[in-house]
Length: 315
Image (cartoon, rainbow, N blue to C red):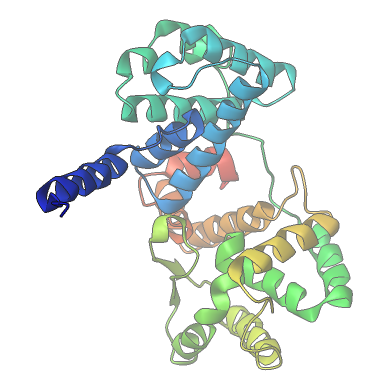
């Protein structure tokens, strides 16, 4: 009769199980870069943009046949060559400032502070210093907006209504697309004599903000029109199955309308800002106060008046 060693078999099974649990596939360079870009922290949109930029850097390393498999193997020369390549492609210095910021933050999150702070990859050394945000966009004029609005109206009353909401309330694209969720609340607030509305959905970093409504009657008219359209299409302004498709529709549609380059969808926000500052000045506020109040309307806080003047051309 054969004697079965039960304990030996159990031990063998345990060892096999333990071995399978402890053997893990090492992360690729792409995974390491993406994970560290996320771990660097920040608002959701900030993290998402950082991951996109660091992915571009990772693809450059791969396409350049730089055969490294670990973030610890990244050298100063790789970053120098990447930025030079981007400059040769005609990428603006401002964009490259943002890309270098993403690379530095990712490297720091990976424990490579020494490389992140290396003098050879400082902005002056890379030839990307002196970039300015001034002049990248301009406010849309009333005549330009009217022409674009009329074309949008022919294509889609809902698209035209979304443009109206964006320019009247100073909303970013995603805020305008998601504004349908707050439309009734805004309507009620204005109907009961309030001169402030709160923007909640689609905001940068998920931070709600109050917007002072200088012309409540005009704003209420725009909101009522949007609600009429929403009632005809599932309570939405942009009637798409999900936010991603709605945003793609918004971007593609505004591009086809000619909102590109210096006159972009963000130019609607610029126009709103200039109107807000003008109205605050007419109400007797000083320039500093007017810029601070406009800054808060945009969600930037009251300490960025100089930024508003420089970028949005507030006065």
